[in-house]
Image (tube, rainbow, N blue to C red; front, side, top):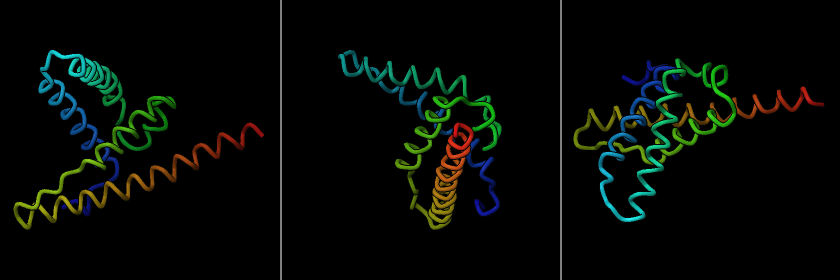
Length: 129
């Protein structure tokens, strides 16, 4: 199923999931203590940035074409957190297989993203020499 998914499709789907997860976490954080307030503020800030950036991203090329350095770093951080907390559902063999394939594709994407980010930074270094 995910074998034919492109990086562009994976990126868009992952960002949509991340966006929804932040909304859910914000709604869930209802405590009135100082720590809960700080957590809500962080979620609100992240949600505000995601609301702005997610519509700009139509695929991997738009990460480089549409985002500045800070925005790019924010999206990469979101994707890293998503990857680190990716849940593989083993409740049935089909779901397990699908989630393992998706996680593998996500890991490959992140590896390629780091490589292309380094290439992108190297190009900028070359121009200043």
